Image (cartoon, rainbow, N blue to C red; front, side, top):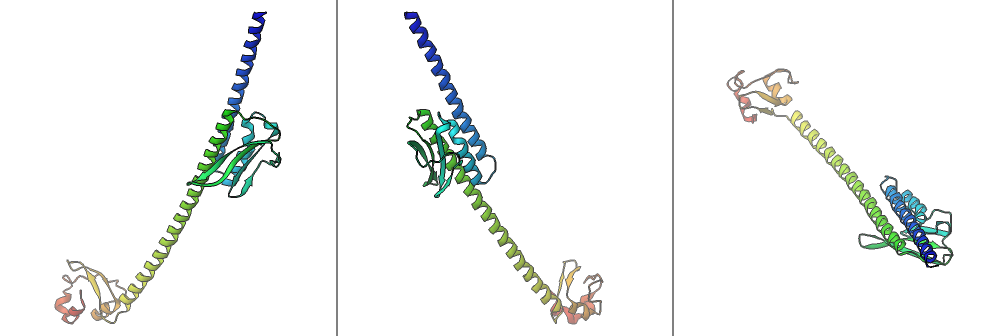
Length: 227
């Protein structure tokens, strides 16, 4: 009789261990699926919808469970079971940069207790969703900053191009001869008035050198305009 009782207890213990193991596997699979959703690169709305749909799979009675993720008063649910008449529920806040923005919620349509592991699970998922929202919003801010920076660079480049054009117009159309040269006398740039003074083509097609072409000696009247 005693052996039968012990045998029965062993069987019950083995069944409980098997049941507990299955529950832990479900919880791990739930965490893995939601983590994969977060890392999928999808937009935030899709991530929240898919996470809510997979949330119930990690709990004891998924067939009578409902799940919802609420963010900024927007509710994301799988749409299979309504959460309006739940009898028992768990929730974990979604906290972004120290501010509570919503929650991750799981509920049963009938009375039932939640396992301690399930309480830890919903807390961990709430933390994961919080980090996902924070990362998403940081990426949006970064994209906005980069976009503004590009616009600023574009505007400044346009301003520089206008300034360059004004300088070139002033340089080319100045009534006095203006020239830029190297120390060895090579002329790097000169305006049309300068070439007219020397009676050379105004397009600068003739390469001149102050020393080689003896410009100082031959045309002393241009000296005041050279720098």
